[in-house]
Length: 170
Image 1: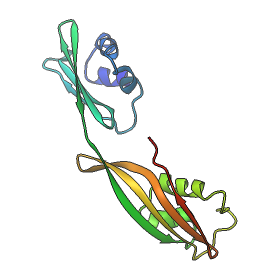
Image 2: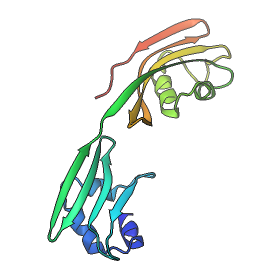
Image 3: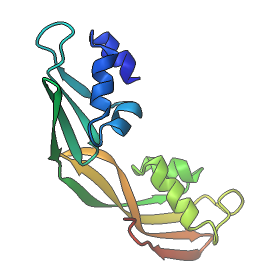
Image 4: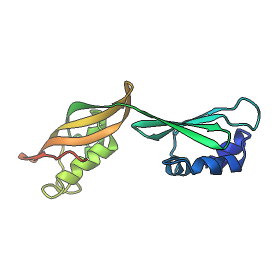
């Protein structure tokens, strides 16, 4: 928890409670995800001058304590969506074939969901079935953050071709 992090930095819970009142700070500071990074400016033990964290994947926040006031600086970060393509052939399982060509678990699950009305992936899948997908990956500052939306896909199951063009999520 953020309380544990503050304690490990030698900072008081009272300071944390003040920071939680800053607009837009409560959720990212109380719902910490694995891998979240926080930076602290601590000029003297127990004294916090500033704190930096990611509010979401597109914005970084710096909270600066200035006496009784908290100044907030939000730095917007540009996200890039890169279009990728992958093709695979079933040798054992859909997840194995998808992973072999670099698809994320989420992208494979989305493809199974899209074709779930046409193909029973538990019963109908055969060695030699094929798929092609067009999907996005989301990058920030040149670093891959996550898989994005599945944009289009085809699946050939036992010789029958199924196609789907997907609408991008907002």
